Image (cartoon, rainbow, N blue to C red; front, side, top):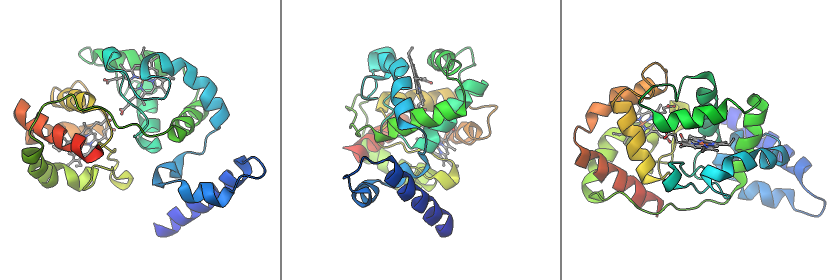
Length: 226
Ligand code: HEC
Ligand code: HEC
C-alpha cells in the first residue's frame, strides 16, 4: 500500500513538473499538494472550461449554493467526486423518484462526455481553494461527538477526513444541510439502496434513530471543519 502511494506521489511529482510554467518550483508545489491531490490527474485547463457548466449551481469557486440545493465541492476528495459523477451518469444515483435534487444533478451528469472529462473536472475542482461552509444545522455538537466517534469515525475517519480504502468520503468541510439530507436519503432508501457503496450507508442509517441524533452528529462534523 505504501508502495502504491509512493508510486502515485512520484507520478504526481512528475505531472506537476510537466504541468508547470518555467521558473515555478515544481518541488514547492508538489510539497504543498496534500493527499487530496493523489488521484487528480486530469487536464486542469479542460476541467476549468467544463466547470463553466457547474458554476451556476455550485458557485464560481465550487463553494456551493444552499438556495439551489447544490453543495460545496471543494473540500471533498477527488476520488469521491469522480465516483459520484460516474454514479449520477450511470443512474446508480439520482434516479429514485424521491431524490429530487439528485435527479437534477443526474441530468447534468448525463451531459458530461466521458470519464476523461470527469477526471478533468475533478482535477480542476481539486485545485480550487478550500472554503469552510457556514453552520446552518442547529444541534448539540458535544452529544454528537460520542455518536460520531462510536459509529461513524471507523469508516469516515476520526476527523471526518474520509478513508478511501473504506470507500468512505470526507464529511468535514461538506455543507451541514447537505450531510443531513444525504443521511435522510440513505435512511429512506432514496439513495444507495441498489449501490454497493451506498448500501453501507443504508445499513448505517438506523444508528441515528431520531432527527436530533442526526442533527447533533452533523453539528459535530461541522465543528471539525471550523
Ligand atoms: C442545475 C444545478 C446544478 C448544476 C448546473 C450542477 N450541479 Fe452538481 N449538484 C446539484 C445538486 C442539487 C446536487 C445535490 C444532489 C443531492 O442532493 O443528492 C449536486 C451534487 C453534485 C455532486 C455530489 C457531491 C457529493 O458530495 O456527493 C457532485 C460531485 C456535483 N454535483 C458535481 C457537479 C459538476 C462537476 C457540475 C458541472 C458539470 C455540476 N455538478 C453541475 C446541482 C447542480
Ligand atoms: C461501514 C462504513 C461506514 C460507516 C460506519 C458510516 N458510513 Fe457514511 N458512508 C460510507 C460510504 C461507503 C459512503 C459513500 C456512499 C456512496 O458512495 O454513495 C458514505 C457516505 C456518507 C454520506 C454522504 C456524503 C456525501 O457527500 O454525499 C454521509 C452524509 C454519511 N456517510 C454520514 C455518515 C454518518 C453520520 C455516519 C455515522 C452515523 C456514517 N456515515 C457511518 C460508509 C460508512
